[in-house]
Structures are given as C-alpha cells and as structure tokens.
Image (tube, rainbow, N blue to C red; front, top):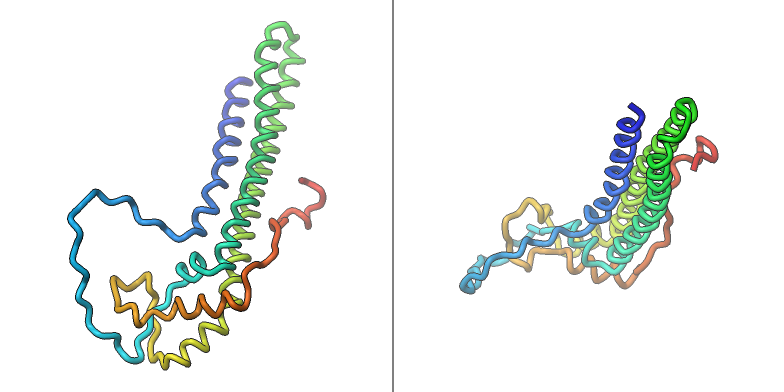
Length: 213
C-alpha cells in the first residue's frame, strides 16, 4: 500500500511539474506545420483592397511587436525558474524515496509506515506547489499580455480612425485578404516607437494565505 501510494504521488507531481512548460508556448504565435515539398504555387490573384474594410490580428501584434517579443521571452524565463524550483524539490523527494526503498526491509513496521507518511506528505505538498505555480504562471501571462494590448489600444483606435475603417475583421477569422487592408503592421510600427519592454515578475497567488511557499 505504501509503495503504491508513494508512486502515485510522485507520478502526479511529475505530470504537474512539466504541465507548466506548455504555458509560454500558448503565448507565442502558432507556427505553421512544415509542409512537404511541393511545386511553387503561382501568386494568388487577389482583388483590390476594399475601402472601409480593415483586418487586425492580435496574435500578430503580440508576436511582431518589440514589447510582445519581450513579454514572451520574459514569460519563458519565469517558466524556467518555476521548473527549476519544482523539479529540484521533486528530485530531492525521489532521492529520499529511493533511499527508503533500500532501507525499508530493515526498518520496524511502525517506522516504515511513518517514513511513508512523511514522504507522501512531501509529495502532496509538492503537488500543491506545482499546481499553484502553474496558476501563477497563467495569471502572469494573462496580465502581461493584457498590458501589451492595453498599451496598443490607443494606436488601434487612432489607426482605425486614420484608415476610416467602417468594419474591422479579426484576421484569425479571415481565410485570406488583400494585405492593404491589414492595419496590424501600422499599429506595430507606432507601438514599437512608444514602448519596447514592460517589467514584471511572477504573480504570487499564495500571499493572502501566508508563507506557504
């Protein structure tokens, strides 16, 4: 019973510890999958840009602006710090668990059960920490990317007015469009002239609960 319980705890911690590694990837613009070699297609003959119809891409804004790139890089750094913290404690727990496995045959039953309980308590605590860190990284990402969009909001509004856009379409919902209708590059250019970095650290969601870190 004790070995099974401990094993489950360690597996859960491992799964959660690595779950956070995917968070930063979600902030990056999705790269197209490598396509098989094919004959070069002729350029698409598109119609003229439609007056008053504009295209805007939030993903392109984040992935193409200097401040967006900085935020993505910083999020990756924070994720690496969390991974080092959680995986370091996980390695220590696994080392102690392996040491116990070699010693338990020589231990009295009550001492063996006590060691198992202690190891499981550590495993559960580490699981909670890993879950907390994942939530903190997600909150940090949401706040940081929201700040990028907030900084760009005046540029978006002014560009819409300057281009006399009657309608603005989400680029992710449009199959293809004349590039002349895309206002995102103009917004990025103005945004880059205003700001290139924003400073932020990992959100701490456990502060209200006291020093549980």
